[in-house]
Image 1 (tube, one colour):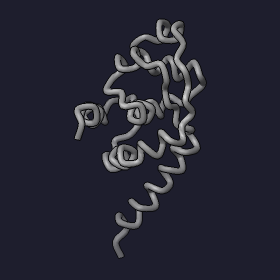
Image 2 (cartoon, one colour; image 1 turned 90 degrees about the vertical axis):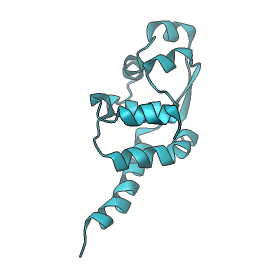
Image 3 (tube, rainbow, N blue to C red; image 1 turned 30 degrees about the vertical axis):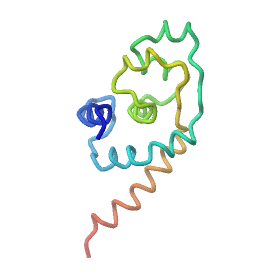
Length: 117
Protein backbone atom coordinates (compact mmCIF):
# COMPACT_ATOMS: atom_id res chain seq x y z
CA UNK A 1 0.00 0.00 0.00
CA UNK A 2 1.45 3.40 -0.94
CA UNK A 3 2.11 6.00 1.72
CA UNK A 4 -0.68 8.15 0.25
CA UNK A 5 -3.15 5.31 0.58
CA UNK A 6 -1.92 4.60 4.11
CA UNK A 7 -2.39 8.23 5.17
CA UNK A 8 -5.86 8.24 3.67
CA UNK A 9 -6.68 4.96 5.40
CA UNK A 10 -5.58 6.46 8.71
CA UNK A 11 -7.88 9.43 8.15
CA UNK A 12 -10.94 7.24 7.48
CA UNK A 13 -12.57 8.32 10.74
CA UNK A 14 -12.05 12.01 10.03
CA UNK A 15 -15.46 13.77 9.79
CA UNK A 16 -14.56 14.88 6.24
CA UNK A 17 -14.69 11.27 5.06
CA UNK A 18 -18.41 10.93 5.79
CA UNK A 19 -18.00 7.17 6.33
CA UNK A 20 -16.82 4.67 8.90
CA UNK A 21 -17.15 1.77 6.48
CA UNK A 22 -13.65 0.44 5.86
CA UNK A 23 -14.88 -1.91 3.15
CA UNK A 24 -16.45 0.98 1.24
CA UNK A 25 -13.17 2.86 1.53
CA UNK A 26 -11.29 -0.18 0.18
CA UNK A 27 -13.81 -0.49 -2.66
CA UNK A 28 -13.23 3.16 -3.62
CA UNK A 29 -9.47 2.59 -3.58
CA UNK A 30 -9.89 -0.42 -5.84
CA UNK A 31 -12.09 1.46 -8.30
CA UNK A 32 -10.31 4.85 -8.14
CA UNK A 33 -8.80 4.42 -11.63
CA UNK A 34 -12.28 3.80 -13.05
CA UNK A 35 -13.68 6.85 -11.25
CA UNK A 36 -10.76 8.91 -12.50
CA UNK A 37 -11.37 7.82 -16.09
CA UNK A 38 -15.01 8.94 -15.80
CA UNK A 39 -14.23 12.20 -13.99
CA UNK A 40 -14.51 15.74 -15.20
CA UNK A 41 -11.02 17.20 -15.58
CA UNK A 42 -10.82 20.80 -14.38
CA UNK A 43 -7.91 23.17 -14.79
CA UNK A 44 -6.91 25.05 -11.64
CA UNK A 45 -6.11 28.66 -12.46
CA UNK A 46 -3.33 30.56 -10.72
CA UNK A 47 -5.98 32.65 -8.93
CA UNK A 48 -7.82 29.53 -7.73
CA UNK A 49 -4.55 27.98 -6.55
CA UNK A 50 -3.87 31.11 -4.50
CA UNK A 51 -7.39 31.54 -3.13
CA UNK A 52 -7.95 27.88 -2.28
CA UNK A 53 -4.43 27.08 -1.05
CA UNK A 54 -4.56 24.19 1.46
CA UNK A 55 -8.36 24.03 1.16
CA UNK A 56 -9.88 21.38 -1.08
CA UNK A 57 -13.23 21.78 0.72
CA UNK A 58 -13.51 25.45 -0.18
CA UNK A 59 -12.59 24.73 -3.78
CA UNK A 60 -15.23 22.01 -4.02
CA UNK A 61 -17.85 24.30 -2.48
CA UNK A 62 -16.93 26.99 -5.01
CA UNK A 63 -17.85 24.62 -7.84
CA UNK A 64 -21.01 23.43 -6.03
CA UNK A 65 -19.63 19.95 -5.46
CA UNK A 66 -21.02 17.90 -2.53
CA UNK A 67 -18.51 18.17 0.35
CA UNK A 68 -19.32 14.64 1.51
CA UNK A 69 -17.36 13.35 -1.50
CA UNK A 70 -14.17 15.26 -0.70
CA UNK A 71 -12.41 12.11 0.46
CA UNK A 72 -13.23 10.40 -2.84
CA UNK A 73 -11.87 13.38 -4.78
CA UNK A 74 -8.69 13.06 -2.69
CA UNK A 75 -8.41 9.34 -3.44
CA UNK A 76 -8.99 9.82 -7.18
CA UNK A 77 -6.35 12.58 -7.29
CA UNK A 78 -3.85 10.81 -4.98
CA UNK A 79 -3.99 13.63 -2.42
CA UNK A 80 -2.62 12.60 0.97
CA UNK A 81 -3.86 15.87 2.47
CA UNK A 82 -5.05 19.37 1.55
CA UNK A 83 -1.47 20.56 0.98
CA UNK A 84 -1.22 18.19 -2.01
CA UNK A 85 -3.88 20.36 -3.68
CA UNK A 86 -1.46 23.33 -3.76
CA UNK A 87 0.71 21.90 -6.54
CA UNK A 88 -2.14 20.70 -8.76
CA UNK A 89 -2.95 22.32 -12.08
CA UNK A 90 -5.53 19.72 -13.14
CA UNK A 91 -8.01 18.06 -10.81
CA UNK A 92 -10.24 15.09 -11.50
CA UNK A 93 -13.77 15.57 -10.17
CA UNK A 94 -15.81 12.35 -10.14
CA UNK A 95 -19.44 12.86 -11.01
CA UNK A 96 -21.70 12.30 -7.97
CA UNK A 97 -23.85 10.00 -10.11
CA UNK A 98 -20.83 7.77 -10.75
CA UNK A 99 -20.03 7.68 -7.02
CA UNK A 100 -23.63 6.75 -6.24
CA UNK A 101 -23.55 4.03 -8.89
CA UNK A 102 -20.29 2.70 -7.45
CA UNK A 103 -21.85 2.72 -3.98
CA UNK A 104 -24.87 0.79 -5.28
CA UNK A 105 -22.55 -1.80 -6.81
CA UNK A 106 -20.63 -1.96 -3.54
CA UNK A 107 -23.85 -2.59 -1.58
CA UNK A 108 -24.90 -5.31 -4.02
CA UNK A 109 -21.65 -7.11 -3.22
CA UNK A 110 -21.59 -6.37 0.51
CA UNK A 111 -25.21 -6.97 1.50
CA UNK A 112 -25.62 -10.53 0.21
CA UNK A 113 -22.53 -11.51 2.22
CA UNK A 114 -23.95 -9.85 5.33
CA UNK A 115 -27.23 -11.77 5.09
CA UNK A 116 -26.66 -15.40 5.93
CA UNK A 117 -29.49 -17.84 5.39
